[in-house]
Image (cartoon, rainbow, N blue to C red; front, side):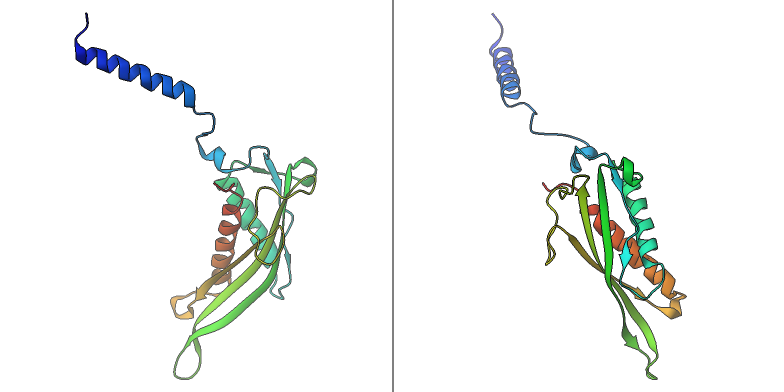
Length: 179
């Protein structure tokens, strides 16, 4: 006959194994792939349209989004005819405002902001996952801002790129499936 400590340990092990087999890990998935829609493998990102008078914002934003998708998601960006889904987008507004001036009213700190609307759809036109909806059905709206400080050697282009990178990160983060 085994000592009582060994009997208790074997009973505890038997109960633990039984519970694991009964409950299982069917509902749980592990790894970064589980953060994204399982039925989507490829995405097409056409050039984002732009209502802005500033040149090349749509192209720069599209490039930043493609880079973010390739780096941070399991999706592959492909041409329209090979894609499982399409991420459409439009820059609906961009603004530049003065945050701080010197005593002669010269701008010393400015803020650039972008308002972007994005829509991610399957090939058949159905929205992918549950999208964030803010006044626009089945769409993602993102607004980001970046500061421009000329004395620090920053230009409009570098401030624009900073805001574009933030918007791209926000849009790609919205591609994750909700918990």
